[in-house]
Image 1 (cartoon, rainbow, N blue to C red):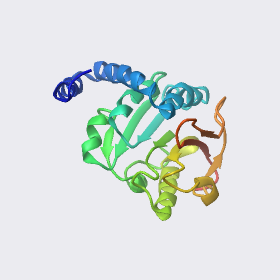
Image 2: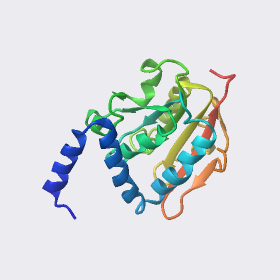
Image 3: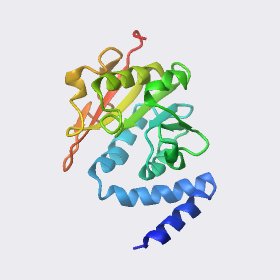
Image 4: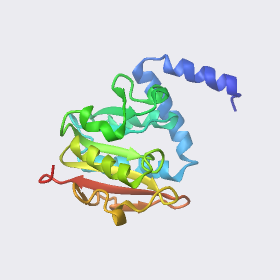
Amino acid sequence: MLRRPAKKLARVVVDSLPNAAADWIWQLANDRRTSQSPDRVVLVQQVFPALRRASALSKGANVLWIGCRRYTRGYYALLERDGAQCASIDIDPFAERWGRRGRHLVGDILDLPNIFPTGQFDAVLCNGVLGWGVDAPADQLKAFEAMAGVMAPQGWLLVGWNTDRMDDPLISGLGAKWFDHIALPEFRERYAVGGCTHVFDTYRRRADNH
């Protein structure tokens, strides 16, 4: 196991590499980490393939990843495997180093409609943001509205949240005005991950409500 100074040096070296090489290394590291995190296993092995089956990650599709951490660095190459283009956003300037290089913005989820054009994204993935910084119910409602504002009609939304961090968004009706709670192909609309408090909900943007 690398000692902390060696780990820090390794991160600096990887971050200095060209995009493709850096993404490949981070993807390998992420694959290793997922074995110890059941929600990330579900995300990589079930959610991403289900989005592909729904054509949400097909060539020419635009995808937004909200909330960046070190482990998310390996996700962008997976999301772009079939030709989709992924952008990322995080309110913390420090997290820019873990965003999609070349397509990352520093910004607030509540301000998405002022950052991106209306209807730009075919898929929005918001995992570990609600209840982890966006905590007040009123702000969580605003977050759903903001995400709806930048999504194309019939676009897919993934929300990952924790039962010990926030109230059930379905009971609260957070997305009911803009979204249908609907299953992806071969992935049910609500998936409670075993071994942790994480839950994935999938939604589809209504075409008749703006």
